[in-house]
Image 1 (cartoon, rainbow, N blue to C red):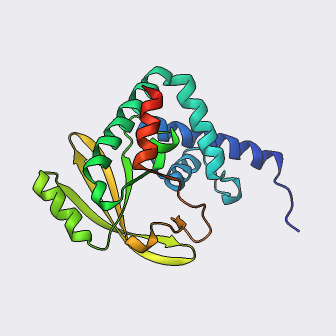
Image 2 (image 1 turned 45 degrees about the vertical axis):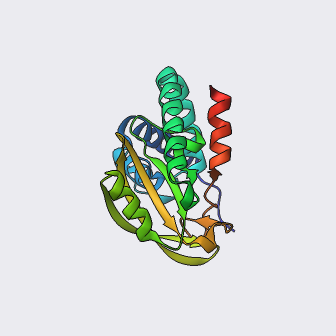
Amino acid sequence: MARDKSPKQQQMRLRIAAAAARMMAEDGIEDYALAKRKAARLLGASDTQSLPANDEVEAELRTYLSLYQADEHRARLSELREAALTIMEELEEFRPYLCGSVLKGTAGRYADIDLQLFTDDAKSVELYLLNRGVTYDAEEQRHYCGDEPRAVTVLRAEWDGVPVAIAIHAAKDERASLKTSPSGKPIERASLSSVSNLVASES
């Protein structure tokens, strides 16, 4: 049976969560694992058992944004969600979904808009962007559909001055549970109609 964490570990866990949240809010880090590693190094924590869970960091991030960036955060989040809706409307033929910090409401000062598209013709997405004059960089990431790994192309672009990360999934995976790791939680996402309702409710 695993032993309970010591008070010292618990305290370090809380400090790492708070430091990671601050980095995500102030420095534009969106990767929870990266923020936690940076925070742990900053605090001199070598014990990996002291690393907080993503949910703990997210709770600290919401607190930090509400305390130190409340008005700015509300305005920025509204702006990003409206921009996401506009982009999703333009990409409607590719079955777009919004995910990430803009959907969850934790987007910091330098957050990207994270989108998922579902199509069996990834090249047509790239051609659409090129014809529209949107420049992008492409990278490959590994996501999971249930327990099965998937090679996913991610296009990082500046769309009318807004940073966007577009993950292109196979059409058959639209109704599946998608994750970034085998043991991770399913990626929360919202359809075009859901984002439209969200933006309308905030207007």
